[in-house]
Length: 445
Image (cartoon, rainbow, N blue to C red; front, side, top):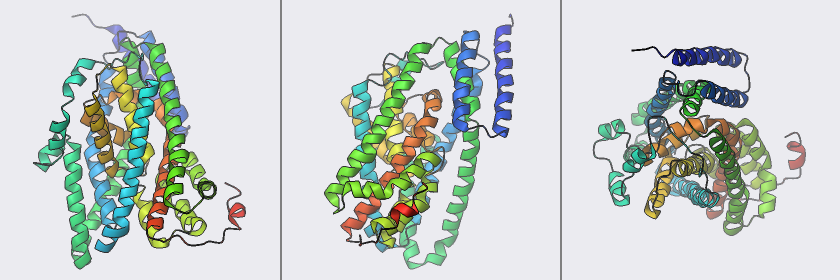
């Protein structure tokens, strides 16, 4: 058996580039620039060692496997943490339920909008996607009927559901546990305090693990792009399709953020949408620039209470929930557009009922989001796993994902603020505020 020296040379080249990535990370080079750089490097390596990237392939596959392993723990702990943060049954029934309803409604609208835009613009068509080792027919076989999937929504054995990556039954199960906690805590909070402490501690640990995985992204991008290009992906078609994907994503962000939310404010509150968006603009800018929904939360709360006039008890419940439930940018628009990109790029026939399933699954997954870096990756991984689409799609689109994260985060933050305002309006909890100092206070932003 002859030795494939070119494959060894490809592996050695990738390892050397890994060393360069490590040095650049130590020097704190901008993460987005680093991702774009690894994309270019992966294309070059794939072209030079075309047909000889088999030794590189396992590196990317390991990353995808680890990423997949994070999905169930992150979704589970995020839902439990969100629901158990409600202080009692009254809050759960009133403000809590209305908050969840509006957060999910804004996400549902974003999902439907994205499907419409994705199909209209034909995102992913003529991209000639070819995920190494898997062809389109194998994905088609994984797509089950709508009725079968609905039945499978409900848990039978939670351990086997976790092992089989059945995300929806797990979500329903943890929702049951979370609501049960609130009911018990309402009568005897001290008795279940250790459970809440454990949940919050577990959340810290799991998200620290996620941050470690996210740091490995440049290495995975280099490996998977090199493998894809080296195995004959049409370079021009794939790269152009990524540009189209990014453009359509930002069209969705803009329509959802200003047009749809403006209509909701106009229909369900007495506020002028133009006035409203002037008020919340600083939070949108901070979300866009920091790419952190959770990091934008303090500014969002300040604007809601002091500039919009939303009562404290509503703002303090709905807005934090908006960093863990809903999030139309990271849990609605982005995962759905990636799924459509894969469906079109791999030539998979999706029926109308399967697109309905896509909507339902995306909405369920949005219950387990988290306002930290990497959320869009987790929600996308969840959706692709359930639909039987390859997780490699995530890594192929990561270079533009870093850019899209600006729009995703601004969309998330806007939805949380809008939802809090809508809940406050339904509760008659929007008060007159004095805002003459508003321009002066935020002049530097």
